[in-house]
Image (cartoon, rainbow, N blue to C red; front, top):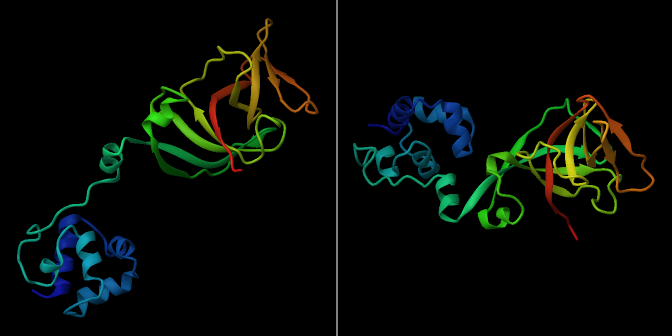
Length: 219
C-alpha cells in the first residue's frame, strides 16, 4: 500500500483533516494533498506524519499492516504535569488598570503550569479559579508597579477583608484597588498613590472579579 493511501486511511480513521495534519507536521496543506494524491513513496516528514497520525513510520511506509504495532503514544501535557506536581493556571492578555481599563475587548488565554506547592503558598483555591494578568498604570504605586504580573484568586468575591487589593469591574472598566466596606453600604475605592483621589461605589456599581494574592515583578 502506497504512502499516500496509508495517510488517507489514517486521516479517515482519526476523523482528521489534511489541514490539521499539515498544521501538526509544520507544512502546508497542499503538501499533504500531494503526498496522498500523487502516489509518493516517501517523505522527509514521515516521522512527524506518523506521530500526528498516531502510528509508526513503518506503517506509513508499508512495512507493516498494523498501525498500532510498535506505536507508543506520547503522554499528555496533563499527565506530565500531574507527574511533576504541576497545576495549570490561566494567563490572560488583558491588562487591568491601576486606574481603570475597559473590559469589552477580546481576551486570549495561555495555560501556564506551576508547582502546586508554590501556588499553595498564596491560596488554597482550585487552579480553575486562578488567573494571571498584568496591571497597568501607577495609581497603586509604590505597592504595585506598571506591568506587574498578578496572581488573582477569583474564588474570593466577597468583600470580607478590608483594605486588601482586589480586581473589580466598575462602570464597565476593570481596575485594581484597595477596597473598604463603608458603614452606609458603599465601598470605598482606594489608591496607594496619594496623588490619586479615592472614590465610593454604591448600590452594586462595583463587581468583584477576584483578590490579588501575589505579584511577580521583573528586577
